[in-house]
Length: 138
Ligand code: 5GP
Ligand code: ZN
View 1 (tube, protein in one colour):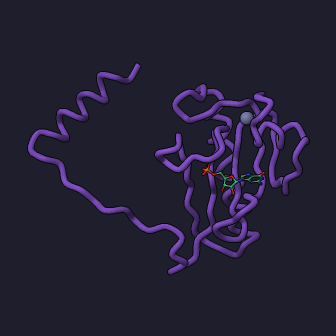
View 2 (view 1 turned 90 degrees about the vertical axis):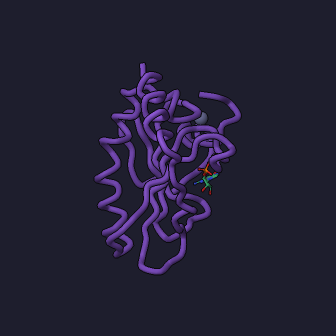
């Protein structure tokens, strides 16, 4: 718990939320400013800032919860599609520094997200990059 973290305050009940799911390790609640109706955030109850520092056990708990929450969101919003989004650090758009996964129900042509510009790799660049990443995985 960090005393200034908004999501820790939600876990502690010091800030209200519209909760949709809870288990021992995770909590899910409606985003206060939804991109679409039913836009939900799934968080671990324990504070970790970003995905790269989140322990596998905690990630596993989030992964366990996500399919059933997504199914229930689609049923309640009468949608059949959704995105999962996780922003890590400011450059990536993270505003709340407590790891969270957005589940955003989608309908055709809602224009909530679009694909970014797609690049190309220079010759040998992809191979070198893949090797570098592979070598860095502990
Ligand atoms: P981020 O940009 O960090 O991935 O997204 C943070 C999300 O948290 C935003 O979509 C924002 O609307 C949501 N949010 C921020 N403060 C609160 C809050 O107090 N309650 C709820 N339910 N959502 C919040
Ligand atoms: Zn927190």
